[in-house]
Image 1 (cartoon, rainbow, N blue to C red):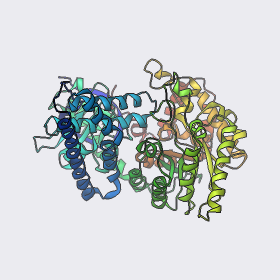
Image 2: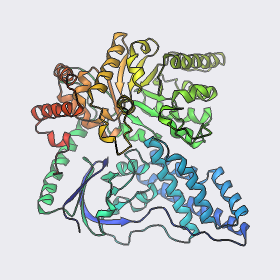
Image 3: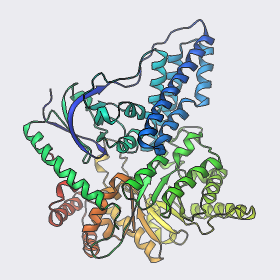
Amino acid sequence: MKNNLILRGFPASPGLVIGKLKILNNKVEFVQEYDIDDPEGEAKRFLKAVGDTKIDILKARENFDKTMGEEFKEIFDVQIMILEDKSVIERTLLNIRETKKNAEFVYKNVMNQIMENMTKTDSKYFKERIFDITDIMNRVIKKLKNRDDISLSSDEKMIIGTYTITPTETMKFGKNLIIGIITESGGITSHSSIMARALNIPAVVNVKEFLSNVEEGDTVIVDGYTGTVIINPDENSIKNFKKREDEYITYNKKLMEIKDEESVTIDGHNIDLSANIELYEEVAEVKKYGGRGIGLFRTEFIFLQENGYPSVEKQKKIYTSVSEKIFPDSVIIRTVDIGGDKPIYVDENEKNPFLGFRGIRVSLKNRELLKDQFRAVLKSSVKKNLKLMLPMVSSIDEVIQAKLVLDEVKKELFNQQIDFDKDIELGIMVEVPSAAILAEEFAKYVNFFSIGTNDLTQYTLAVDRNNTRVSHLYDALDPAVLKLIKMTVDAAHDVNIWAGVCGEMASDPIAIPILIGLGVDELSMAPVFLPEIKMIIRLLSFEESKEIAKNALLFKSPDKVREYIIGIISEKFPNLRKYILGEFYEE
């Protein structure tokens, strides 16, 4: 038994709880391979399992609708979409008939082929969709095995520990049984994390080696604010937990009290705070946490649903709905950022997909794809609160080509007498060093910049952040990255356009004084982080922040920058240091 073991993960849903651990074993189902004599009978058995699984998902959706309303029903619709994918069903039936193998074995092979392609991506978004596919696969296989779903035998409230937890499991157990969630996998944008936040269940995800360090019935502390888990806390840790619990209640209450206030510094400088979303149901979170608009609407999932080619009408329906929900605030729709490391639009694997066929390169190669997305956005722009943004831009020519396509679509809609925002703004993601270095030139062609610090850091430092051998070198506070941000912001302001940050750096409390001091106009982040970042902004001085940023640019390493900012936080916000830095726990 491990005592007072502290593990770190990602804070997926805020809250602080202590309780007994229930371990759910829901890893990929094991199946045996065997020959069958009746392929048609096996095909019918498979189709029945698919049908029974759909009934379970529909029941879960109905229960969630009654509890939380219809905002989140698309999570379950996505699962049904995966379940009923025609290509998967047809391939499974064909393989059953041709190989005369059992349905479990054939179906798992088909699904594994899909997931194998998706694991090759560097995108967290796509990797998190793998959990949805695994969930559906496991559910169908369990039906084929005549085995019931996971259930909790106790009525006692408990903390769930598992490799991953699915939306339907979260809904099935619900707030009446689950008081906390810990997973070894997943991320803050996974469907399960979204639902945990909707149900106000504290959750920490991506806690490496958690399951190998716990036993059923262990006492566990879950800190969904800092992403910390404590296994079998000692007397002192429990005492500190109770103290922090009261502090967090007060702290969180203060955050939510200011969520609808202006994000303005003490000397009157305004910073726009908006949200990053990937799914329509996240719009509810934007409102819940006080977001003023959407600074990044990733559209990849819309395309995945239709194997890369969603209709104009389907896109229009989604964009119009988001526009209406957020109005009068704005929504920045990023054209599909999909490419060589994704399972669609390419016929063969690329040796280095991160420097290959992706982002705007794919869209310009597939002009009709880009035209359709432009058509859908323009048709949805009647309220004039939509903006367009191009991903992974590395050359001026890409922007010129995209604008020509946009103008072509505008003329087409005008001739058809279709109403649209004729002055819709067009911006670019600045996430490639060439775009930052030539920002002065790019600024002549666009209406705004949105700096994607995740990729900008990765490309600037030549560090794959998912490679454990070099990930320690990845740091957005590196002076080289900060200088590229400054170049971009200065170039934007020189021609009176705005520049924002939509990477993870925007939600890092340590980075906020620097970003504000560098003149960043807008910060966009996952909705849950908005209140805390707003609080920090409201405690800062713009003039002091400019001095902080100026000093930060003089250092030669990210460690020195971080050390300097921590000193500033300790001096300026001693009462908030433990919250901003997460310094509640000993390493």
